[in-house]
Image (tube, rainbow, N blue to C red; front, side, top):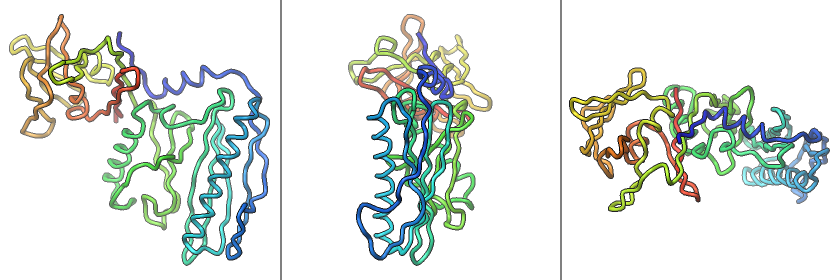
Length: 315
């Protein structure tokens, strides 16, 4: 059975599972560092969370916030800073809460850095970008940001090194908003940079291990083409004349012939070979999972239960 959801629905499912809980409250704690740095002045506020039913989780949140402050303190030492100004902003989104923590580091020059903590107060869990964009969130986001930077070369640095292990983000009105510190991906004059992804534009389609087949000769996962492609927003037509499948979406078109290991790349005169030719079995066309990455520009992953998820940003 086909199972596909937009990233927005993916996030709503998470919100729908939440149970009613006491709202999170924020109070301001002492910003003085645990380690004394005599040559650096620290000013500003540190947020701390109170009011949650799960006090252990509440302490984990507060420890995460303190860890961020400590990392900024060490960064200030590395840059021979003489002052660090801390500030924060609370962004509620349903039962989800995000704390944006800013550090204005003053050394030979000034630099504003940012890090976030996101948590579901009702569910008692920290929030990750996978909660809103699906299991291929990192790869999709990196592809999106790299393409966005290429379209706007004057606003960004020439190279995007990828997301950090803990990307800074928050959600608002169905969008995931990524934050990058000053000079991280854009010229310093632009300060903290925001890049937004509309969750409605992200599609995820999943198949359990009994919904795809594996070609044992090459151990290649073969995915039902129609179910996957339609779940990702494409249309399919069958050509009886030459046993071919035509995959289209707006101006995009590619053609696949059953039994022929040749896959046309849109906009290019040449074609490529993949691990297997398209197969027709019991009236269903199967293609190697790499087809979705190489030809459609999607991303895929397989979890510990051998469930395959293919994701695409449908701009």
